[in-house]
Amino acid sequence: MALVGGLGVGTSHTANAGDPYAARQIFINDNTNGSPEDSASPWGAGLGLETRFVISESTSFQVQLGVDYYQEVELSGHDTVYTPDGDHINPRDGYDYSDADDAVDQPSVEILAMMGLLVGF
Image (cartoon, rainbow, N blue to C red; front, side, top):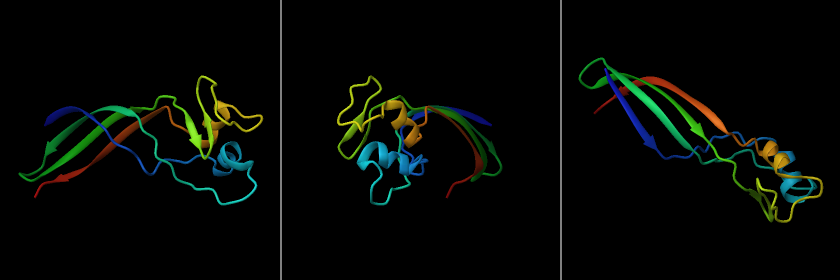
């Protein structure tokens, strides 16, 4: 068994995009036309641990546990920007950062748990 710690950098292109209709209303054009997208890619920092249990010379069973943290950052779409400090650029009437954050479903903390076989060639 080997316990390994590390620091990595990555991006997820399968993140939940939240409510695309609300995001279109808050960021773009008050939801008047067009088709919303339903994908997103948030950036963050994470820490994790993994351990491997050797099965054979080229195969091991691997378990990973980790946590990812995403800091509150400005949220932008088209010509609209909402910032955590309230210094918005071209905001839509009646909306603020919390509305934009809810619409895009920005994560703050995510837990990673993964296990599987690691096969070397």
